[in-house]
Image (cartoon, rainbow, N blue to C red):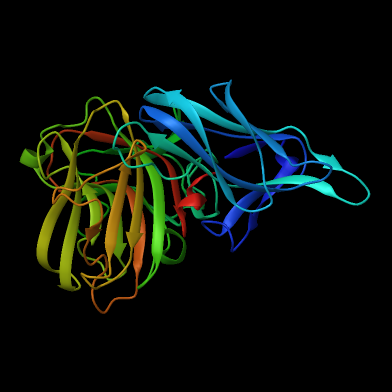
Length: 374
């Protein structure tokens, strides 16, 4: 969430919070965020406060309309508020308007999380608030300097040194603000295995993980209206990769070649680097060219089929995988390897004639779900 004014508070690590990090507010401020949400009937604010001649009071609003106020206690408490929220984009705001400082005390507010509870039996979305990101690659700088490497036909080096070409450029977007536009044409082969590509790459420490670590990811992907919707007939193609440091097929990735017109989450189970023992399509969704897919994922990294897992939210809604589960248990690393790093863009089989354009925005990686919110 963003805080206005920014100097009214700061993120603070707190081991008693649900995700280990909070926003601590010590003067009058509004914490807000615009999110895409399914139809919802309730908000849950988790907060605590320091009293001073009275408890702190919060006012919660959706799209500028108050849905309730609450006095906040001195211990972490969930404060539910009824809120009829239709499907779509909405701004959730928590206002702390009654700070007080005297010679002996200071009235302040600590926000742990804001959770939107969808209508019916749909599982709740991840919290809107809390935590700290390990890595942000959202292109808000207007360039590729946030990313460790840019790779395309013309360039394979530091993101900070990249000069934009048609292959990769940051553009303005009416929904996301800034987005990266990745274009691949037939023959855009960079000279190393194995396909035509235009991608960015993060580091293992910041964008990926190692055995036993759990990482949360949020990002958005949009396929250009002219993107080939018969990709499965044309050849393989990948937009997002959680890639082994050892090379070869990514243990986890989003592909466009499983089914024509579909974007698919694929697991490559490997017994050793690039020794694939099973390729599993665990989730499909239509490409919906011209529209943004807002994705949240939780991945536990492990080379063990019993310890690794993947969880998925699309446009704020927890998803069920093709096997009927909402937690897909599988190895997410290659046995005997050191870790995973992340790549996004567009990477595809050589010899595909149609040009393809894919947009990416908003990438964040965090150790907890609360860290996905800026």
